[in-house]
Image (cartoon, rainbow, N blue to C red):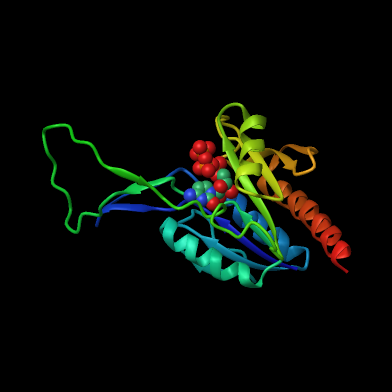
Length: 217
Ligand code: CTP
């Protein structure tokens, strides 16, 4: 099977030396690509600036901005069986990028931000020949928020993690997730290393892919 995995943060430029980003390390997405390869699948890893090295054997595509990620995903899904959207995409970008370094001022000022494009909702909703796995980073109301994203972002499953915890989630080597499916079922993987969580996720995704392929044939 062909996996496309997005990982890491995006960066949205303010001026030539500054940007808006987030704390995503890329570890979860890189572990998923690695686990997919170890299970005998092909993996394309589309990543923003991350703190880890890409796994050997993955086709690696480096992106920086949410617009670059959007375009790279749309190209990659033409030839894949599953898209795993693990990237922590910036929801806003500066309305204008200053061509020169902004000088320090004494007075307070506000930066005008505009929404970025949502990659998941920009994908076709019907007649897709690949599965879509979303992620939901939540600090509160995990189940309700994840279910809403599963629906609104038209995912086949969504992997929710609590990013308010300091011992798992963003930047950590560990994670704990609950996966929500379209039929209302859910499955929890309790706290473990991201590599172990990734292996479990790849198993669950592969099972779902096999089911879909059997249905089609
Ligand atoms: N995502 C996306 N495009 C964006 C923002 C997010 O495709 N512009 C994807 C992420 O890769 C993830 C899912 O949407 O798979 C949920 O991302 P998350 O950051 O949890 O949610 P948001 O949509 O940003 O909503 P909120 O910040 O309000 O929780």
